[in-house]
Amino acid sequence: MIKRKYDCKPKQDIMKRDDTVEKLRNSDIGWRLFEDNNIILDEDCLARVTVNSKIDSMNTWSSITKSTEPHLFKLPEEFWNGLDKRGFIDADWDTKHKDIDLSPYIEKADRVIFFWGGYNSIITDGEVLVEYWDDFCYPGDDNILIANPSKGILAVFVEDCFIFYHMNGLKSLVDNA
Image (cartoon, rainbow, N blue to C red):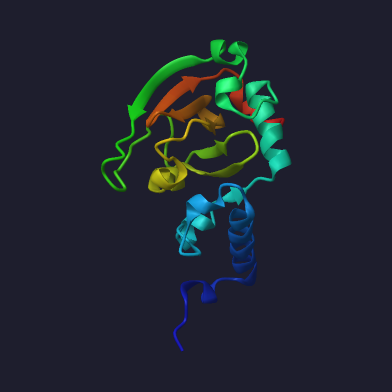
């Protein structure tokens, strides 16, 4: 009998993994992270993903955007006017799994909240985001918001481009959501 990697892990790790896989499978964005009914995230990365409920996602989204509107393009002008644009990175979709460097805006150890609109989000780290960015972000996406509370950075992914903004008070907004 061949032992799988996760057979040797503590029972609580296996339960968390199974819970995360099930939450992703049943979410509106789960299709992005499965191929032939198998999760594409490796064991280590999967352990560093927490799936937020729709209510938790919207509460955090609303705290950040000051709006219950779940789409980036429908957010009030006051939200956008309160951001300070810091830079952008063009995402090359012509190269499969192109290495991407999101620093200094998002570093590997940074805790990030990744939103696919107001109702769907995960909490993970910058390393998982960089490793799987092209599974999280598709060329036609126009409703992705990434919050890096520790650095006060918000990123949007629109038209194959990451655009980075600084937002004063972002950490306290997320901590209090």
